[in-house]
Image (tube, rainbow, N blue to C red; front, side, top):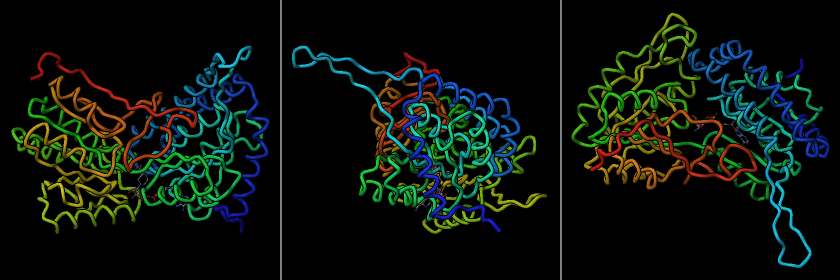
Length: 449
Ligand code: TXE
């Protein structure tokens, strides 16, 4: 019986196909690439409800979140269709007489894309669309837990009139298929999102053979709540950022750093809101938090709850396994009061678990926020313009949010972190430079002190 998992030989055939297709595709016109990407984006958008249903059933996020993700994947392809027409170049004066210098941006070559399971449509779209827009060819490996979403995306791409070999789906294990991408001299660049351990391994191997590499790994993102914050808004930011999508987002806020004067009120209110959340079937109307993605992740979450208790973190709410009418890996959202040295305050759990750290003042809160090897994103809830502006400049992360949840980013701007969270150019295309970016909800200027 044929296997649904590719082996190393089949992976190498796909890489060879991508390599053979490169000369033609890399010299295709921007209009040709724009048309293809636009077609893909249109089909995804037209089928977003059906794709969202597929995603919710396979990964377990709630149906509204899943439909939103499918729509986002469509918008990403549409955006990069436009970008394909806007590839800039420069003409510069030469230092030598009678000579003109053209600076152009060229495709990198064959791009190996290795994706995680937590955003099985949007993250692949965010890697595939820019790679194709700028004339690269692609070999794509979805995560093992989400083959249906990977297949659905590839099926749509296969109908977009792309020449054969430009885009290749290879299903299989990280060890076999992923490793073959990493090792192949025909793969010029690798774009990876996933765990720190796998990212480190890819980095070592890729740099040894001088492949270009872009890594998005974990986060331990802080949300700072200052005493002058709108408390209700801050609690909603924490709730959304820490627990929605079952906490399975690299941008989730898992450290809630709260200034002492509002600490107890914040915790009480958050506890109250947690009690009102509905954990249940991803397709059921009214579900706030779907199941954990699989048994291994659920075990990891439970292990961290045990570690938190053993290390002396104070349990505030949740963390229990839940029974529901249909089988699933359900658990209630968990909240702890922790100290900075607790593992629950230092390591990425990737589940619906957050901890609160008490801060004496703004400077202490900032120091706690930066006390981590990660640096993906950070948030601050405050009505002080002075502190918001300072935080945007001094939080050691790629992205800061003001009076917004840490999770939730725009697709048309670079995405990336600092320190241990990221490596290489920010996600938004292999040809773009990373910048730090900041977003903010309304801020009451003039109230700064
Ligand atoms: O990640 P892996 P997994 C974290 C999260 C989670 C843990 C494990 O804590 O509990 O990672 O998740 C492929 N060469 N995050 O097992 O193993 C693999 O097949 C090449 C956080 O899913 O890193 C998959 O396609 N590729 C993160 C992809 O790498 C290899 C999102 C990710 O798998 C490979 C996901 C190898 N040797 C997990 N081994 C975030 N912060 O966004 C595996 N892969």
